[in-house]
Length: 139
Ligand SMILES: [Zn+2]
Image (tube, rainbow, N blue to C red; front, side, top):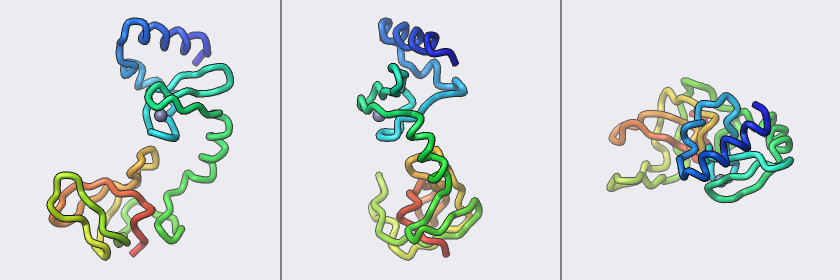
């Protein structure tokens, strides 16, 4: 993606108050490391988030991602698709009357490295859930 084109697209949608969503499927969408927004744009050497105005250097972030591509549990063990894990602390669930209790076993997780809640799973009594890997450990 050419820099000027990106800039032009941003200005175009901004001036018309169109959501940037339209460009969501571009192959080189950059996710804001702070708020996970996809509505980011390039400014000189930096990337800027239009949602939280966080600025960062994509080259530095890319270097970090090389190390953090793995999804680690609370003990620093790498998790894999299909693993079983145990929840290590009570997790409040939006819309549910009770939290997912510490010690709850979760089978057959699916990893979602691009998401803030990087584990998809099903929990008995709750249904489909998205968890953070830091709140589980490998069973
Ligand atoms: Zn942001």
